[in-house]
Image (cartoon, rainbow, N blue to C red; front, top):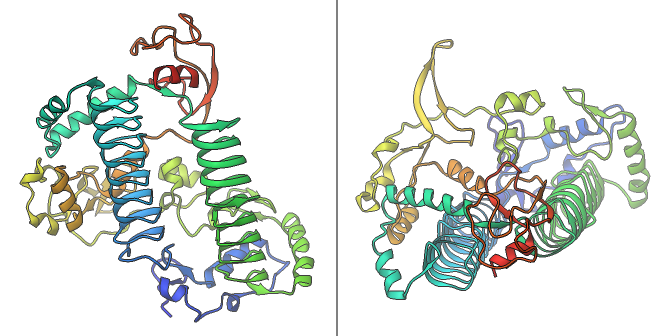
Length: 543
């Protein structure tokens, strides 16, 4: 068995060793100690019990550098994704092929710099567009083909800037748009941002939702303050999931999850799991368990347990012993709670204390949704990971990257390219040592490389090389999505036009020439400039 030690105090196994039958997680079990807080004991168990190097299924092919990925082949730096092929630098990609630099796309082929798109083919630089073909710079379009720089179109073809053209006119104009040139693409991106701000948006992105609030919802009923959720019922505060029922305070709930609370990454027939992380494939009645799979039932405070029942801190008990011990432990957790360095008290019913996390705040996706500076994170009691020393030298400055893809030779594959967010190494006068710094707070890697599959794709699609490292590119896509927060607002339809006068309505609305009286919860903050319509006004304009 391979045990890997870096600066971390944890024992880490490679995937083959971790999934093998060569070790038993119960060998690390310990007696419950009623003289110590529960969370302290759980942390001590976590130091001994081996951890999985990356969360990957065993059916992956040529996917060495991925995490939280299953059923995929020939993928590189993709995360939280399933059943993909030839996908690179993307997050939340499902059932897709040949995807580059995209976020939350599924059931499609040939995506580039797309966010919240599905069932499409050859779609580039687009957002919230579905069932579209051979198009670029689309916002909120459905069933469109061969369209360019357009928004809110339904079942249209050969449109440029929302204007109809013939097939011949469309291709003649588009042939003059050289997407292989960096400067042209940057100008198109600026125009695209103006287009989005001048287009009506619905207060809640999604459809077929009954009594639900949040954003990016589909087929939900009675789901409040939920985001990126589909086929769900009776949920609260759930982010990213599908086929979820009667659950609350969950991040990552996969088919199917029921009666789960205060947990992360639960799914594949998870039932009644509380305060747990990573439980799947037929797990039930788990409390304070980490990475429990498959078919684990009735376990409390266990780590990396598999196919077991009636375990506490990885120690095996009989059913009768377990049922007697658990109430005693819960009482002990309330009488002797864990108190962190900030004086916060953690009794039974609280999630794991952040200060016991194996990861620092800026190593997690919390930094993506709720970004903090190092000072802010430390003040809240979170740990922070400073950049590790780099053992490479940048060989190609950002400004030296060829503007056009035709100017890029195969030698680019040997270059270490400076990220545009990185600025020159400076001398720290206090410590008299060289340190690298970045102008962003986006986990910038300062430099990156181009891999052969990537270069081939850029050439085939006539796209310029990126100027940002993969992490910084990912953060730019996140910025295109709304925050996980809701505000009470009024519809901005003022009768014949939007309140700001930018958009002129194209159809009669039920409120006539008067201002729409509808109010709603939305993830668009009141001070934002987007045109936000209620569902009725939106449907009047976009059908």
